[in-house]
Image 1: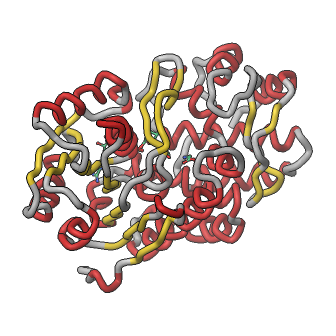
Image 2: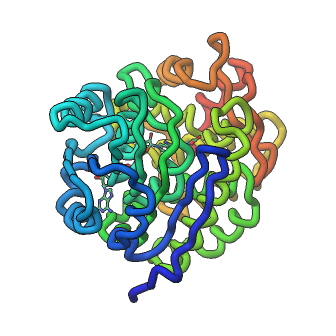
Length: 366
Ligand code: NAD
Ligand code: GLY
């Protein structure tokens, strides 16, 4: 089925002078006019990886025919999301003598988007960039909102910058080549929106998960749009995460500990977040906010999506506490977490008593 550009959805992230559109639709990579509208330079650097390049680079390059295009292909994987590879992007920009008005286009999943955005934020103190997200996770979450950065061996996403793109181009056609494990990992962040602020969406997902897993185009389009609306609203309220934006991190402190503790790569980000949301639900029950039934319902939806909820067998409570103590939400060394008051309503970051946290870490079984 070929959906024409007329059916493309356009949302907006409202951030005063940093506002930008999110385009969602089919065949958008071939829509030269979108790129023409948002690229104000002659020089364009496409940052992608060795998996995505053979699939989609040619299509993109054809749409960039009017520009002087250079490409850097990074190795594929979360383990390469580190400063060393940001440096390689700088090497390329400098070797090709890219000026301050050059545009960087990030073509890939969340790893490429976060790295491309961070390189753009730093090169000559900031050059324009465009997000072309190619995974569900990137289309529903990471490409929107301007969080960019890399991992450190001691902490996930600990080096980075807030830096907004010129636009986000979410071409749903590219999801056809995404494998099921990656598709499902993206659904974790989708369920997150239902849990933190959108009960209706949570209920829709309970009823329609099978359509989503069958890659029904309409269901996918709806989910990408509704997720982006949720994300854009939160980001518009709190661009720099001084308050409400932190709710987007439900389950992430546990999840980041799992990703860091298992060495980046064993668990996909979305999988680690899914397990983390299970921990957060358990702790929210211990706080007296969620009922046993709520927790069962949350775990049932995660499992229905095919997401893992069981804690990793080889991580101790001490390791969890150690990795959780390196988190951007922490204040004065205290671990702060996003929990749930109910399904559809998250708390702001709260200090949790060590004893209560230890009870969850010890007893939660998924
Ligand atoms: P990813 O970027 O590693 O992509 C997953 C895999 O799919 C990779 O192997 C990639 O090469 C491949 N791939 C990408 N697009 C494809 C396609 N269309 N067809 C076939 N294969 C394709 O992982 P991800 O899940 O997209 O992103 C995870 C990253 O996003 C993490 O580093 C996480 O920290 C970050 N993240 C950032 C934010 C943010 O706000 N900036 C939010 C959530 C997650
Ligand atoms: N993924 C969390 C955020 O963008 O704030």
